[in-house]
Image 1: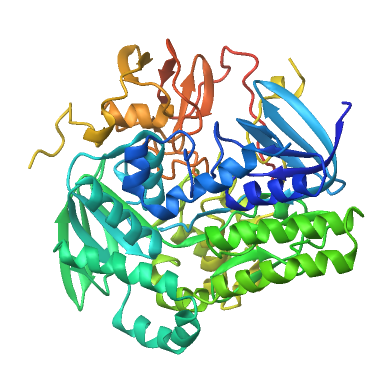
Image 2: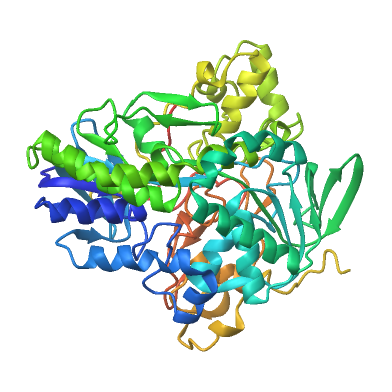
Length: 458
Length: 122
């Protein structure tokens, strides 16, 4: 297949991808931006250019900010290919994608991976039932379709996105039956030593406090320190049960929205065999990178949450820093110019990231909701339970890749995306070794499902 | 509280502030025609139409519905215009689209020769 040549391919049109692509084009490079969606924004700014004003207003100013990046992108020479499913990125910078039912390949001089985050798996009993979704999924329905639950909903878990969705639902007049918060008083105690650093990122902290205050003022039943979360139901969700201070609670609802933070989407960096390390604070794997986002695969850069969770504003700054790094690598900028231009961005990035240690400790998901009891399904596709995984370990299974041959764990259509971290942590726990030692699934292309017919160019 | 009633109100609905946008398209789900707002994903359209069960798993045939809405979980897989395993959260609705749920494991040999999906090998 002959490949069209381009300076840089950017994968993902969220904040990091939009900002990075714009910066690269501004530096005079030819840029193709590939994204799965029909409009720019990624998940955080999903549908930002299409959302009616009323919806944008409801979602709040942080969402509306996405339009600044989208407008800036539209004013550049960046070729934004929408509805493009990238299924392979090679170590020599070839990028293959499916668009309009046809295969395309680009030969780039450098690649910027801006594939963002996904929500951390929340393996509890009943989490596979219809009616159970992530808070992020519900927020996507709000952003992209202006849709919200018809019945009083239960929000459960912890983390900024959960409270933000609660605030957005309040503004939209969507009834919330309860907020079941897994954050415990001890978590605040543990997080306090990061408060000084967090105070230096005061705008974030203030926003968070305002969110929590509006939820309190709305008198939504707010349970804190909830443990033993379980969804009840046979064919669909009927109730959420949990335990607070030893007392079991049960709230009837058809709609349970779960959230316990976000983790980097590392499908591409893993498939490129870049080195990844276990982050003991964020409890996930992230690719090793230099200060410009370059992986240990020369010419492949990462920016945004895909390289470690930092949030949307940090992602945009990282996108621009990576653009400078790429420009220097391709000889468009000298190293001194790169460094000089990077100073202000890096300062702003560091200021942005000061809130993270506080958030990581405060909203650290509970062990029991990451490393579940035996009966809980871990691999949703192939319906492998935590107990089965532990049996595999007892039989000598040392890591996620062996778990595939022991019982098809991680071999369904999601290619291990949704069970990867749980499998790593369950095996690490059963073997009593660190998660980093257990490692992650070996990810191989195609990263997106493609048919043989499409591959053959039929 | 109604529990397992056969026909239930949709789990999701368009906000009142959204109902002004009037353009709609018609698609079918398992042969039943559905009128849905244009410009939204197939998964969103099915949820707004009261579809709770998108598919049943190949292993135990348990019911499933969208979980992540962003292309990660593959729970929203449906057959669209004869092509199975489409991620309905990533595909926009179109006039005349024929959507079918995927029930359990596929029968082999299946009758469409171009649908073999590459799977990750162990």
